[in-house]
Image (tube, rainbow, N blue to C red; front, side, top):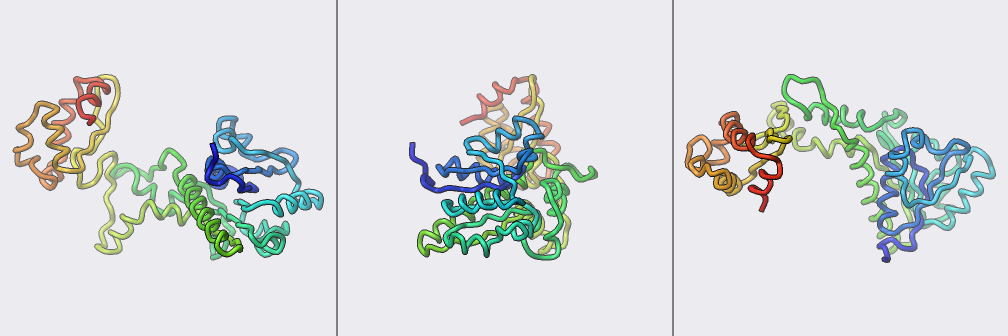
Length: 301
């Protein structure tokens, strides 16, 4: 089946996850991705295990080049001449040192799109600092926003900052490709982990700047919504959330607890938010005697 990006070639100099996941998505959309690994040992992520390597580099062609050697540089230039995008997540300045900064690339191929992915961007006071996903989580307040009040900062399990950065890089690359189709001219993109991380905490930050109050950590609950929590079933855990009043009413009918709809402690979104512990007890008492499948069957539309 033809892909949206059939005929587009991407030279992937990325390592680890944020960069390679961007080119992975471009490949899933139909682009030909040529992964360039450092000779002689290949990408560092190969040593993180086959699952990690395969997940972020499936479907790509792969070569090894010594980009500090003239022969390696010559081969890379030949690839870039025939390509549409170059993706890299070296530390800022490394591409220039090797002779592949955007100025050199656009002389070689005016239509080339250079996708720069880094921890803190290509410019500014932190540009030379290295960063991985947990650093972005920490600096943007994601770790503060995760977990319960009184707990130490908690890292979100999946590397969400890497993945969001990859999505931002992909969106930018597609926009640049569209622009190039209109003008014939490529451009350089500057995508960084910290910017991406702040998109996850923009609401609590805006609330703090507006009210002066620090956001509360809610654990598995959802702030002013109730019920919104994990509840133990006979064979595991389920998460139940009622965002709207009609959802709560539907839960009450499914649970055979219609009287809760009129109970003043649970008759509105606001009243339930003021009686969260009591609401959790009502939901938990119904869930505990059922399997996960039984709960889902009762509540699913």
